[in-house]
Length: 81
Image (cartoon, rainbow, N blue to C red; front, side, top):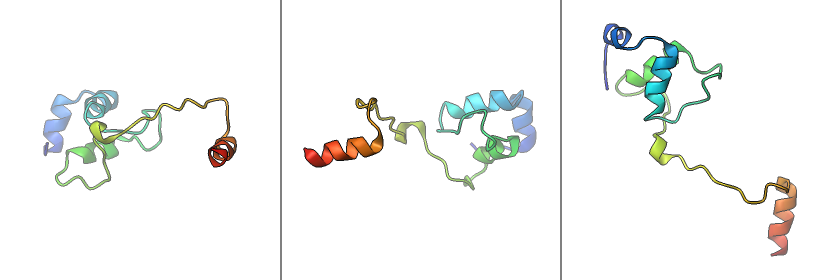
């Protein structure tokens, strides 16, 4: 997906539009994060990508069933069993 800055700006309307396109393929920080800048998002179009990226398929979101316990309490429960 290597593209010039001119090509990107002709297709991409604004930063939220670029974010939505990239977030369909890559795992990105929250859009309200200070890390999400136009320069940061444009780095995803460079080849090789100069920043650490993860594809959405490689990210695993765990569903914790012990929401009533703190981490220390869960550790104690784990030690008992």
